Amino acid sequence: MTQTASGASSGGEGVARAAEAAKLSYLIGGYETSSVPIGSGPTWAGEALFVQALNRVECIVDASTHIDTVLDSIRSLSDDGWTIWAVVPQDQLGGAHRRFRQQVERVQGWWFDGDRVAFSAPEHP
Image (cartoon, rainbow, N blue to C red; front, side, top):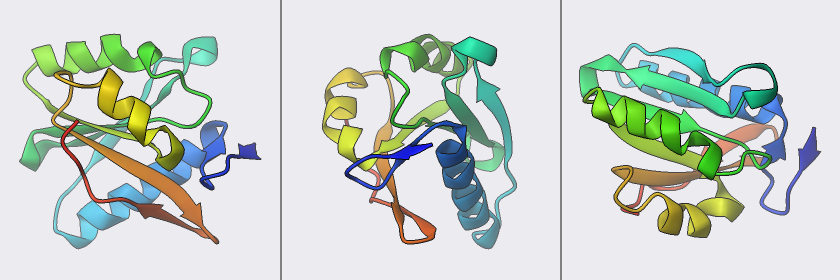
């Protein structure tokens, strides 16, 4: 695992920690979640966190994930009626705004702040 200038990490550990932090936040808010990988093996691209009560899926990716690799998954989930949020490393937020425009409802940054994962406020792409 390597850390980027924003403090996000590349490698699955960063996504796993970001997903766990998001799950905890939803649990505190009274929402149950479930998650599945986006892709597998060499095509692994991140984690999809489902919040059924909100009809939302957060697609959480790390610094090594090229945004284009998750677009098919996002389109498929959106076609199935889910509202999609893209959760990306903070230093990729600008690119996510451009790339996910008209693809997702919100984009949100994540990064490591010491030992914890922090999130930016959700934004319209």
